[in-house]
Length: 387
Image 1: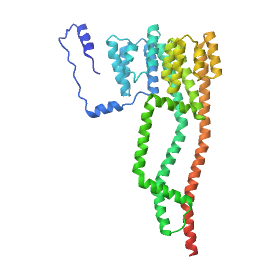
Image 2: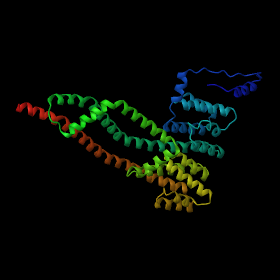
Image 3: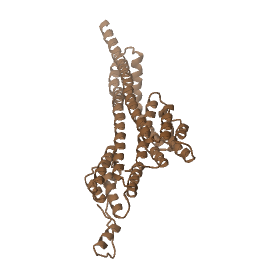
Image 4: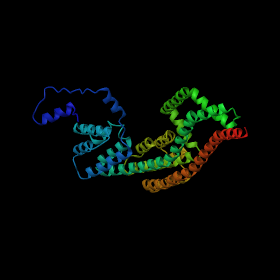
C-alpha cells in the first residue's frame, strides 16, 4: 500500500525526525496494468453487504478503525474494494472522518451508504448504522437474485432457439437445398421460404452481423443518454404483465430504502433523494425526486406521493396513517413485506406464463422445419418409387 507524502511527514515528525523534502516515487504502469484496472469489476451487492456486516462486528468491539479497515483490505478479493479501503485508511490517518473518506470512492460506495455512515458517526451509533446497511443490502441482493433466477430459463431457451435457427439456416438448409435442386422436384412453400432465408443469410451475413452489432451499440448509447434511458424505462412500465411486476419491484425497493434511511436518522428530504438514487428506473426516479421538491414547498409526504401517480390508493392511505401516528418506518416495513410477497408471486406467475409460450413456439418452429425438410424428401422418394 502506498503512503502519501503528508501522512509520511506526520509520522516522521511524531518520531522526532524532521524531513527536508519528500519525493513520491512514480510507479510505472504498463498498458496491461492500466487495462486490467479499467476492467476490474465493481464490488457486488453481496460483497458490500459482507463489508457492512464485518464493519458492524469490528466497530461494535471498539477495534481501531484504521487497523480494522486495513485488515479488511488485506483479505478482500475484489481489487477495487481493496483499493478503496486502503485509500480510506490514508484519508483517516490524514484527519478525515469515515464518511468523508468514503466519499472519495463513489464508484464503490453509493450515497445511501455514506449518508447512513455519517448519521451513525455523528450520533455515536456507527455499529447500528452498519447493521442496517447490511440488512438493506442483503434484502436488495435477495430481490436481484430472485429476478435473475426467474429470467434465467426463458433467456436460455430464447438464446438457444435463435442459435439453432442460425445454425440450421447457415449449414443444414444449404445441404438439403443442393439435394432438392439435383432431384428437380416441386418444393412446398415452407421449403422455399427456408431456402430463401438461408440464401439471404449466406449472401449477406457480414452486413447482417454489422447491422446487429451497430444496433446493439446504438441502443446502448441511446440508453446512456438521459432522455433515452427515461423513455426506455417508461416504456418498460407500460408492457403488459412485465410493467406491473416492475412497478412492484420499484415499490419494494422504495419501501426498503426509505425505511432504512428513516430508521438510521437520515433527514426526510435527504432520505427521499437517497431513495431516488437507489431506484434504477429513471422514470420512477424522477417522480420520487418530485416528491422531494413538493415536500420542500410545504406539502405533506402523502400529498407529495399522490402527485407522482406511482402509488396506489392503498399505499397512499397507509402513508397517511403513518404520518398521523408517527410510525412511518413501521408502515414502510409493512409495505415492503407486502411487496416482497407480491414480487415473488409475480416472478412465479411470469415463469408459469412464459414457459408454455416458449414450448409452443419451439414446437411450431420444429414442426415447420420438419415439414420444410421432409416433405420434399418424401416427394423425391415417391417419385423414385413411381419411376
